Image 1 (spheres, rainbow over the protein chains, first blue to last red):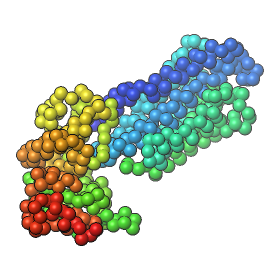
Image 2 (image 1 turned 90 degrees about the vertical axis):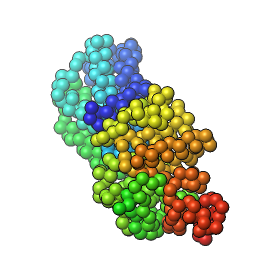
Image 3 (image 1 turned 120 degrees about the vertical axis):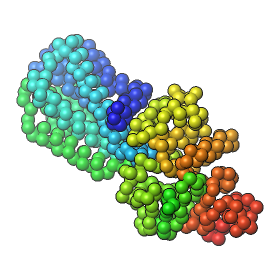
Image 4 (image 1 turned 30 degrees about the vertical axis):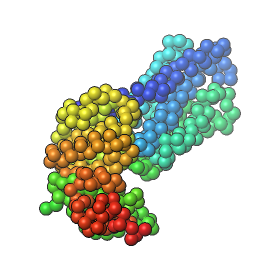
Length: 244
Length: 237
């Protein structure tokens, strides 16, 4: 087994041994969706949601939970802890660059996020007849851009924070607005116009996700902005990251 | 040719001078001690030897390599135990050894290491559940897992009880017996006296004395290395 594969399997074991984040990222979105769908009226067509059912409009928002938990809570905590404990420094004295550890962490979190999102879609379809995305490729592209931008923000939080606690605090600054603009706390159709417009453009791209879903056609500008966030976040994280 | 050769090493952090013209050599097969109080420049010097920091001035040769430019080659041949470096609490002892073994081209046999460091009974234990002495045995094992020619051990016995310290000393002597050169960073004089063939005494970023513990005692007219150390480093207090 090559070194990166060995690091990744070891990190995956460690991830599963502290299962809070695994459970939160994997099961929480689907559970929230089930609970929300059980509220009377959520599965009825609503004029406020543009004739859609609330539950249909809300699935992309639920995806935000998974991405935000993993990217903005789990990753910054894990990476900052490794730096605080001297694990990254210890690794720097071996033939293996500590970037391998970062790569393994990202890979594991992306896999868990995608599994959580897949589970959410499956549950939405099975329990409430929410249709699958009308434009699957566009949906995947948006999801990819949204995921990269969110994860780069998480790495940026881990980069500028000295301790795991500080990383959590930095990440929370991004976490709460992300959840809010993403329509997790309040369904997006009920948000004031200006907040909804902001939410159209900020990661993880709830509006383009939704547009790809219902087949309304994604506005290229939204994808460009999302890609911009991804590039900017990655560049800043790379610029400010400290190994010790 | 010495295994390590340091000439006029200098390193500053901003306006603070951490290492101010340090020179010493370490021969193959010895246990060489770097002694000094906290802040004397020991750890900075060792970090420059490992290539973790870039020196501001002077020459360093480790195993004939320049740590700053040949770090990749150096990391394959030098094993390191870092001061205050921990492993993830939920990592098992055996997993840690197997993980680090995968980093090296010609690693030691994990089972042999477990036996040598008396960790066989704890191989399935989580790192976070180990005692201080057991944790240090794991970090020594990790320093040895790449079959290094040189082992750098930094503040090895700080925080250990007297039994665990003696046990750790015995292991370090065992490491040397297998032909590995040991660079030991410590501020414990009894440890240096017991283990080291030669030592360099650091004070305020300089080497104030080099020699065998016996030579240093004689030169300072002291009955113990502890007394010799105090009189060697007193001038700069």
